[in-house]
Picture 1 (cartoon, rainbow, N blue to C red):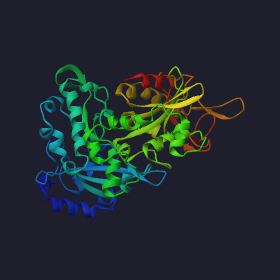
Picture 2 (picture 1 turned 120 degrees about the horizontal axis):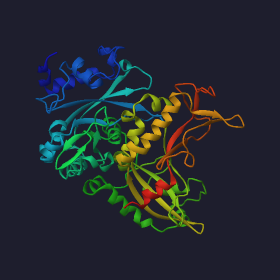
Picture 3 (picture 1 turned 120 degrees about the vertical axis):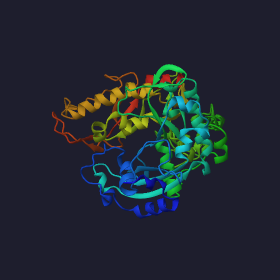
Picture 4 (picture 1 turned 180 degrees about the horizontal axis):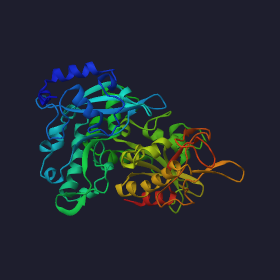
Length: 461
């Protein structure tokens, strides 16, 4: 192994990259001894066994002369046949004290990640990494991308908190594409920051999972399955939340009937509010996002409140797999990622005297204190029951029920867990058979925000 390979030319780097496509990591010598915890993970393996230089964490790009940083990241197949990024792309660590004194173009982020060679591989649950196929690559130069202004704006948001001694208040949902994710196996480890005596969690720059999905679909495969509500030029000039609030303000105060007439909808379906929101956003069918929402990781939900401002229903999130629940540490789990990156756009409808009207949209980012507080506690409580085979029981009629905390039974002040499936027969496998009932699968479950917690969210400025 020779670090002279860090001085390969761009053509040499790309030639090695092209030859690796559609091969597995096993083809390059990865074997069953790989546990996923090896230093550097699969990225480190690619550095050492394919490019032939020692994995490093210095402040220079991996390929020094070419100014290229190498990253290896997984994509996954979804149930609907689409492909998306499995996780965020972690970049370099943030030294709070050094970064506070930097400008965007003198920052460690800019210097190290200006040119990213991203290798994508296809991840499959239960398959050993030796059998993962390397499928695509992209040389992403953000300065030349349409997203450059947003990335720079995100960096400034992070930088402002660092400069003002508020690194401990950074949330990944503060920003749209570029985030500052927590880094380190021990979530209790803290580090000194600039301009404050309060210690903060170690963090690294990262591109959000939603942005990585966009890169994969749009740049690598030229897929654009979503509809834009605004132009790229408009987006680059102003924060997305401000633009959306202005766009949706024209519908404030309109009743369901008025909106139905406006959009030509005659349905009385339970999902009527959802359908109306789709029309406001300019999307239809099964689409749940505009292009910019998809890229920025914004998801929309509808909620109806009564005259006192109390929601009439709880709010569901994506269903989780029981295997993921018990076998993935919280700090590495997809469930945590979903909440840490959570940027909600809530369409609020108000019901007074039986008449439902569109009130407003409300944006909300999930604070880390909530994610790593009550949501984590709920995750660990449910995981422990499934892991011990004590999550289920027979009711008086002999029907299998679960013991997961419900909104009105043992739930905390933020969330609860209950079924989230179209049919009761929509199941996920249980890695450990339940002791009392003997079942080996159960109806899909998800986390739900409690109604009282949603009320608090809607009351925030």
